[in-house]
Length: 132
Image (cartoon, rainbow, N blue to C red; front, side, top):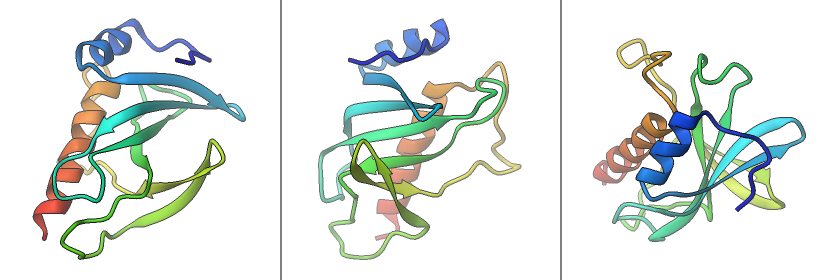
């Protein structure tokens, strides 16, 4: 697994405790964390995908935003998923999920981290598939 940059110790510990296979990869100066074989909830076209998040320059004080998946996710129900875009990463077309925190669920520096963000990502997947 690649480790182009060092994550905070708290992140390493929680990612390992969550059993996630992760890599920290620098892409043209941007810090990305890729999760290989990320478990996708039932109701989608795949059971496992690569997931990625981009860390902002001021992370962990600044929030992580969105999530990216390869291969692209679709719902088995056939209904569409809104707010998607294609983004080229690792010479592949990842699917960007444009999802953001709200004032009701803000980023909490010193509390939130990459692991709480991945819990949020799983929540996005759950809410989307429950729409039918």
